[in-house]
Every structure is written in C-alpha cells, then in structure tokens.
Image (cartoon, rainbow, N blue to C red):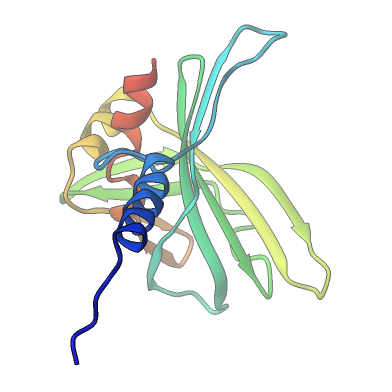
Length: 170
C-alpha cells in the first residue's frame, strides 16, 4: 500500500524545519548565550553556551555534571568549567594544565562560584584566563584536554568553534 503525502503536509514539514534551523547557529558557529554591551561600563560581553565535556580520568569523587563555556569581556578571554558532584572536587585547585594537540600549557585557575545545593550536591565554577598564545592554539586544535586536580577533561568539542564565533562578533 502506497502512502501519499498531501502538498499541505509537505509544505508544513518544510516550514517547520526551516523555522527550527533559522533559530539555530549557522554550521560551524557556536551558540552564544550572551552578546551585549554593559550599559554602565561600556564593556562588550560575549559568552558561549555551556557544553558537556567527557571526563577521561576521574579523581575519588564522581561528577554528575561537567560543562565548559568560553567568554570574552572587553579584552579578557577565559574558559569557565562548572562541575556538580557529591563533594568539593575542585576546592583548593589553582592550576589548569592543557594539552593542545600535544603542546603543553599551564594556566591559573580562579574560583568563580561554589555552593552546596539542595540535596547536598556541590556546585563549583572555576575560570581559566586565556592569553593569546593558548587561545590561538585552541582555536585551530583538533584535540584539547584539560587537567585540574585529579580530573582530566576532553574539551575538544566544547571549544571547537567558540573562539572563532566570539572573534567574529568583535
């Protein structure tokens, strides 16, 4: 038995797909969650959407959630790492080590936010300032891995197009 599709159904399907894609970032672009100029300081602030990252090596505690985002604030670039777990896994950590296509980088890790949430889980956010050297390396890299404490994260997919997307907005 052959199914037939009416023209109206076909047109509705095409329009739905078009509208869904119209609101999505273009292929090769990262999604931005912030792109504004602060009305008080005049600073341009841009941030990409958080993306999940793979944990390649774990410490003693399991992480429920691990995500990263790239940001720009008037000349300052950085990477944000957020985790949720049963305990303080990043407390006291002040260094982030990167392997960017095999090249080693060491950057300062700055505490941005932390709290014990309802139910007892621990939320931590750390920032990593990105100088021009590491930013350029990450922007063109195939593989980007980050280590802090006893955790190693594969952040390759999460930073794939983020730097180029922010640069295009400047």
